[in-house]
Image (cartoon, rainbow, N blue to C red):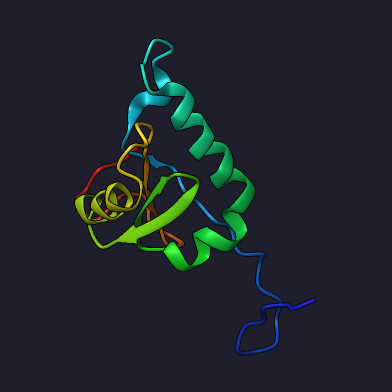
Length: 110
């Protein structure tokens, strides 16, 4: 087990991953035509978050075809996901914050 300690040897609190920015609101609409595909991608992300989220901090994360794609902008991440999975109608798009960050770089707060 790894433990984080400060410069004086005091233990640091466990890191917390915060990922709360939702850029695609299909999850909120029960009648959304692409809801099933969106939820498949959401479930995949929940099952793989420990391997996907840490390297995605400070970037936009898109999930399509149960595969993760990152970019420095929402458009870049979505374009990568669409290029790899053009027939997935339920692309999931999030901004993965870094510790202490409450909003995406474009100022969007969720």
